[in-house]
Structure formats: C-alpha cells, structure tokens
Image (cartoon, helix red, strand yellow):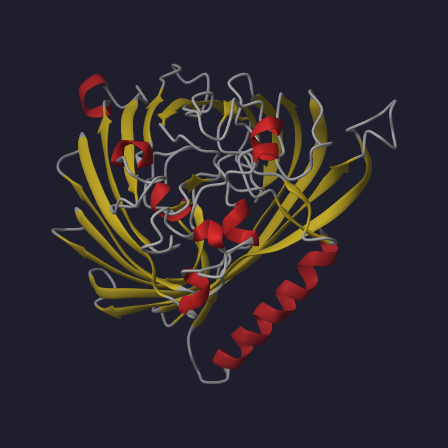
Length: 435
C-alpha cells in the first residue's frame, strides 16, 4: 500500500500547489486511508462464462486497501482523489488439475480509481444556491441500504439486470458514476434534489443518461424518496445502442429491434423508530422498489411485474453490543438469468438465452420461468473496538459479481450474478483498520 500512496499524494500536492500560487486559501483535509483483510467462502456459486469454475465451497482470503486525498479551496472548491486495491484469484481448469480442480494457483492484483472528483458551491456557504460535483465518484441516494437496493444506478432496463460491485463485498450498496451531479436543497434541507448527467462505463461506452433523484424528510420519523433515470438517453453511436446486426436482437414479428435504452423509476421510504423508542434504540425500517424499463417489448418484456425488484430492510437494535445489525430481503420476479453477457459481447437488449449459461446456473431452462433466484437476502453485523479498528461479518445470497479473466486475456468482472441458485450463498469475515 505504501507504493500506491506516494504517487497519489504527489499528484494531489501538485494540484494544490497550483492553486496556492493563485493566493487561494487551501485547506488540506486529513487523509482517509485504510486496510482490511477478508476471508470469504462461496457455497454453490455459478459462473456462466467459465463452466469449469467455482467449486463449492470456493474459499478466498484477500487484502483490500484504499487511500483518499482531499482539499478545500476558499471554502467553495473541493477536490477528492482516491484509489483502492485488492487481489483476486482464478480457479484452475479441473481437467488439468483433477485433484485440486477449481482452486487457486496464483493471486492477481486489481487496482481501481475509486474517485476523482471536484465540487463547487454557489451562493451562501451555509445555504448554497447550488452545489455542482463532477468527475468519477461514488453515488448513493438511499442512506439506509447496506447491500441490496440502490437500483437506479446499479441496474439496466433492457436486458433487466441488478448487479453488485466485484470489488466490495461489505458495505457496497452504492454506485460508481462518471458525470455531473447538480444538487439543490429546499425547506431547510428537508427536501433534497439531485440532477445527474452521466456517461456509461459499461458497453457500449459513453452513452449519456439523465437522471433526477429527490427525497423529503417529513419529520424525524418518516422519509420518502423517488427518482427517474433516462438510461442511455443520448447514444454516442445509435447503431451500437440499438444493434441491428444480430438477427437475435430483432422482434419475433420483425417489426423492430430490442434496444439498450430505457427509463427506470424508483421509490423508497424509511421509518426511524428512535423518536418513538428512544435514542438508544437504533431501529429503522426501510424499503425501495424500482421499475427497470417502463415500456413493454414483444416476447421478452411483456409484464411490468417481471421488471420490478423490491427490497425491504431493517436495522435491528442490539442494546449497544454491536454498532449495526442489519437484515435485508429482496423479491424480483425476473424470468431470465440476471446477466449482462449479451449486452457486453453482442450489444443486444434481449435477455441471456444461452442454454449453457442456464445449465451452469443449475436452472431449469431458458423458456421456463427462473424462480430459484427470485428471493435474495443479506445479514450483516459490525462491531468497532476503537475509532480505527472494526470487525464485520456478513452472510448473503445477493447479486454478487466476482473478478476473473474475460475477453481472451484481460482481467475483468463476471457478466452476471454468481448467486443464481436457490442454495447459493456466501459469508465474509472482515477486519478493518482505518484512519
């Protein structure tokens, strides 16, 4: 991790020194850095891209680290830069390694730009007229979600997919976006509004989406929120967003083609029981639902209910024994495999209908409704020993992705949910040291 820290720090100092030369008041914020060690085990996973992969149980121990450098200039401009790193391993080919098939022979590093963003505050600093943030950044509109949810920016409409991060197994309920966020609060910050103009980071790259997210705190107990994402509203190349070069992407009646464009809706609420039960009772009930594509298309997208994931979560009080104890559940009646495989490889908007993918997932067929993965669940618990040291345990059957080699020889992430079977699940034990 020391190797990573130096170039980031030097780069940040270089930017800050350039502003200092303009006689700006520069405040260097404390560095946010940390390391974690995770041990996790997958039970009955599936990997549609590599049939020989992922024995059960699949065991891995990996380190994770991150460092963020930030600064504020004249109280209006803030820069944040951060990188994260971890390792991943590749399962062996069971044909070549019959005695140790599906276990690992080598660790591979994975380094990612976590954040490179800047923000500017217009108007009064205490009650800004506007705040504009731009760059690559994590974005989270549901403060209560711990694992599931956050559908508006972690989903696609056509094909219908909901996928988690391949890097973060713990506390990963947020999206990484590339673009601009314009924020404005009203009614003493009770009514929050974000307008987002983002660029796609999944194939086909760089299509532009326009989204609006809002929330209103009715009182200390109730909060409601809603949003809309006009996904790929402005294609960079229309022929790639609506691909007409593959007969499999045409309607059955030959009247049109499936497109990757679509409009997604979101609604959520939360109920905080602290004002009722007392501040020592950390209990909150929350829910979120989404419609992944408001328009029906022939054959594959004929029912709105099939495109509506719904999540319910509860923060459970522990009497101070734990920092947080949380349980979440999701129901999503998706009749197809949760996979972006065809979107990434063929550029087509219909579902993944590859028979091998379904067989590897242990699912019945491409024509029968896929019911084994309709219900998802997650349990997590966190305990802090000090301000810097904490322990987390998690068990889940969610929309987990994993790192692996894809596209011939390049490392990437699995184009699908590796927890697609009814008996699929995993646990994570994590110790974290952060400053």
